[in-house]
Image (tube, rainbow, N blue to C red; front, top):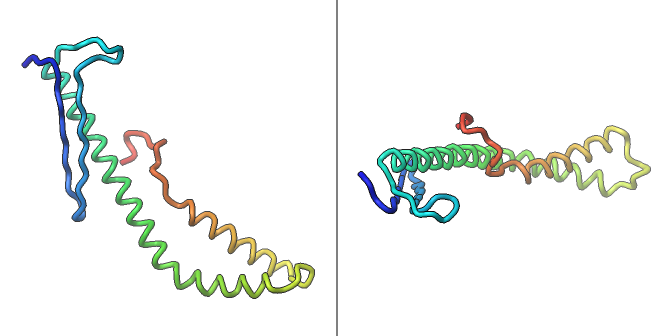
Length: 127
């Protein structure tokens, strides 16, 4: 099979969500036209399939993190009330344990706000 251009579309359904990647090629990286062989088309298909697999893996991580956030909301509300009562005290009146508890609360809140990213530094073997 020889052609001047190729387009590949991979669709995958997971957990009632649909993931799609479409790739095409009609020139090399320098703008020169290429003749597309079945090997090039197959490599493009594999690359698209890997990207869809990565999207599904990232979706799984994001969904698991969202579930963790929901289960922690109740605990966080209690911790937040405690932190507010500590913050209401003058800093000089706080015990070292209260200072540590307040710092832990603030650090945890910051870490949870940064819990999920798209992990662009994943290796291809991590999903």
